[in-house]
Length: 144
Image (cartoon, rainbow, N blue to C red; front, top):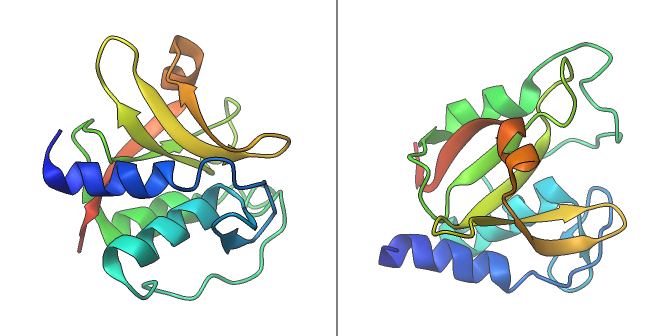
């Protein structure tokens, strides 16, 4: 793991145990998956690159718009599958990609850190079903 990747993974691990709270981004108090990434961004880069408008749990699904993917492409370089990369997941076939996590381990037991309703921020095994849902990887350190 390089020092830059370590910084991102360390920042993400510091959020573990934060409860799930839709639209929030406060370490220890509450966050959703986007809020986790926003919090890590603030720790690594400083001010967030753009304001996040209010969003509903089904945001962009009715329109079928890949808003999160497009914004990530605008702000970040593609990832190489290294620890610290931002992972974008499509939770159901045919749905928009809108779940985010941080790749934390790539050894024989790969894992990622994310926030999910009912669980909060956790480090989960990057099992085959999770890995199959990944649609994009981005270098969170490498902002454009």
